[in-house]
Length: 257
Image 1 (spheres, rainbow, N blue to C red):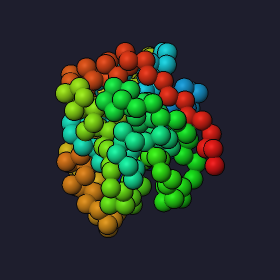
Image 2: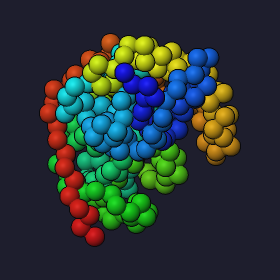
Image 3: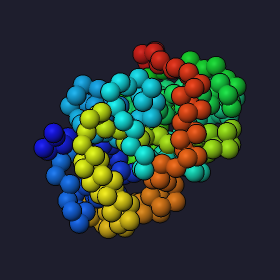
Image 4: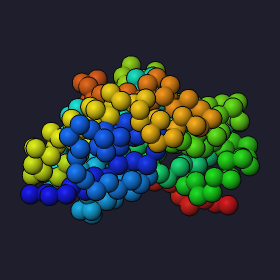
């Protein structure tokens, strides 16, 4: 039995209700928290460094020996605001897309949208230096994720919100990350986690204040309650099954310089 579970979660604004719940629920969940970018969360779980993890949804089909936890996710039912493709040209004129490496789901979702909504076949490159975003060449676009997106709002005439684009293409919401537990994890532990997550989502405003996000130049509470949807409902399950069944696989090349 796991005595002190190791829980891997994302170190972004959109997870602070979850983290607040784990740390401050009425019955505190004794756990070691591993806070990293999304792709590292997946690696921690795959390598056995975490017992429970909030994983990029694109990783789930590759997993073995896991259980999908049913109640909560990081999702959106409209614009998510922090997963976007930006460019100086309309998306139909884009030749190269540079991909933020921190989220595998966002990378694969960009690939799905390129094929099924935008009808383009760009070259895909890893975004290795964020300074490059400010020095875009003609035909370049950039996939940006996470809190850093707020820094680039208003700097590009074309911004494509990936959750909104997916919804327009499929009439479905989207789930970027889901909770998984290793098979055999005691139900007492997963139940306690669900209770903690519920507490956190119900105390989102307190989480914003506790972690100092009320001092940011953007409205963190508005973002968490307007752009993020935490419930892993049937529609989001349907969306992910459609996404997984598509078999899209984007493997970015090294930046050409």
